[in-house]
Length: 103
Image (cartoon, helix red, strand yellow):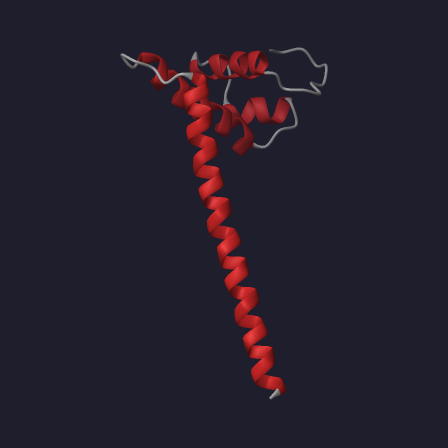
């Protein structure tokens, strides 16, 4: 991937091509980041995602994409629920402090 046209949207196919070039030693993370005005961490996150998905492909019974999505969604909802409870508790604690100060 050495054309100089700026890429506005990174499709899965483009990301896969870049990651494969890195895996094959044709380029480096730093070179890709510099060439495409990306951060090194962005490119590294693509590599991490590719490795996770590659590992899944080698399993005897790979996770179905929908199953993987639903698992990720469940984990995200749990984290969101915990954050909501923390915010609720902090607001309630703050109200109690305000009531004590006004008494």
